[in-house]
Length: 262
Ligand SMILES: [Zn+2]
Image (tube, rainbow, N blue to C red; front, side):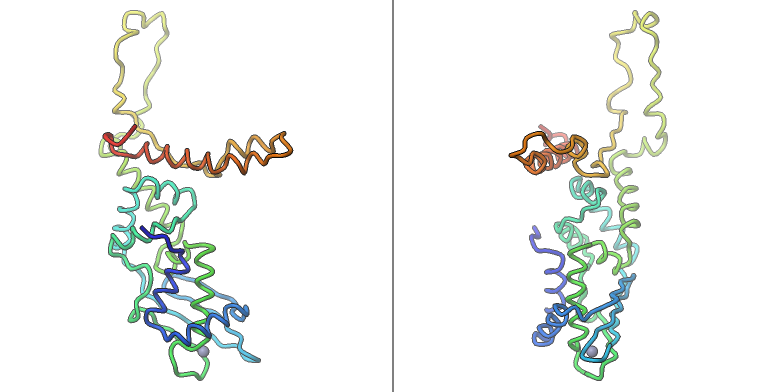
């Protein structure tokens, strides 16, 4: 399982085909905040790099993943309850990299895929400005890994929409697609009218479909309670990891195969 961060995986991929000395100089540029106006779009990155009195324009081009590849990734993600739940909650755990690998979807560029140009006169590739942009991007990807998906052709919103649709299909099966509202049309008769049938079995539980997703704001119960009256203890800080662990475990059980549920 992947334990590395998004930035490390990105830089490792680039370092595998880039000159080590150039990468080091690029890192120094990134540290000096000489890299400005980093724009990330599907298939393209543009940035300005200040070097002495001059500013150079760096442009990277990376092919988009095609629709079929994205569909494969989303289908894989939808089967992983915990990942999809966290993704739909706005998180992007690094383990998602494994899902891309399993779906044979290259998220990180290979040598032949990456086209880099810089307006400086240096003919070596990557020039230090380009390598600087590699590092600046690494920081951006750690702050918001969804930008890496945008670079490969899907915005966060597009990906989550695809995932929601796929989850509904995966979870609900065909009968729900055919008649989604039917699930909830259970009328409750007056008690006096149902004395004869009160203990009869009603509609099957099998027909009831639950949609479990994390709350839009994490840990709503703790946030609603506000600061605790105990001065000495930060109760929210203390309880947060416990609430998170319980939520994760509940989702894992909820989506586990029937023979793996407690
Ligand atoms: Zn350059």
